[in-house]
Every structure is written in C-alpha cells, then in structure tokens.
Image (cartoon, rainbow, N blue to C red; front, side):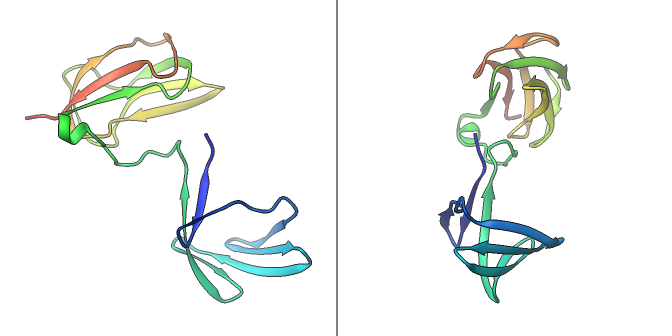
Length: 147
C-alpha cells in the first residue's frame, strides 16, 4: 500500500537521482540531471518554474466518502485492512452513525487506525470485541442505511 501522485492526470514516479530540498514551507528546489527547478506547492496547484500544474495524491490509508455498492445495496461492511488487534470499539449495534464517523480502532504494525463508516446508517452488527486479533479482510462491523 503506497501513496500515488498524479500531475495533470498522469502518474508521477520521481527519478531516483533527483535531489529535493524544502527551502521554506511550500517552496522546494529540485535538482535533476544538472537542471534546477523552483517548485511552489499550494493546496490546489504545483507551479514549476512559473508553469501551473494540477495534482492529486492518493493515499490508500485516507478515508474517502465513496460508499461504492453500499448506496445500492443499503449496507456497508467494514473490514480489517491488514492483520492486527482491535483496541477500541467506538459504537455499538443499534447506534445511528454518519459517514466518516469512527466505528472501530485496529492496531497494526504499532499504529492505530480508526476505521470509519462509509455511509449514514445504523450499526447492525459489531463482529469483534476489544483486544481481539483479526486477520486482513475480517468483518469488523456491518452498517445498514436507515430507512
């Protein structure tokens, strides 16, 4: 699982021989193949030597509001992204939750990951308990669209 970057819609893989130095927040100096580039980074745009470029960074660990089939089927299943241990359960069966609300916290590789509801709905099932070990892909909770 790694982050991916796209500039103007095309995937970007930084050259291994490029040198990057942050001069000040949001301003970088890049040296590649004997050429120096001045790069300004804002929330919406990267400007390289005066040429604006749009960019997008995809981080698979970051929550996004894409419920996928949940809206069609009326239910969403929260699964463990990797093997770990359930350290906290943040809600209970029967509780009403909103999209983005934390449901379960799983610790994996010494990091705690809060798994969030992808939809507004009711928690139908919490399938784990605190301090329980879980395998990758294990069902942790089921949320159903209220209706």
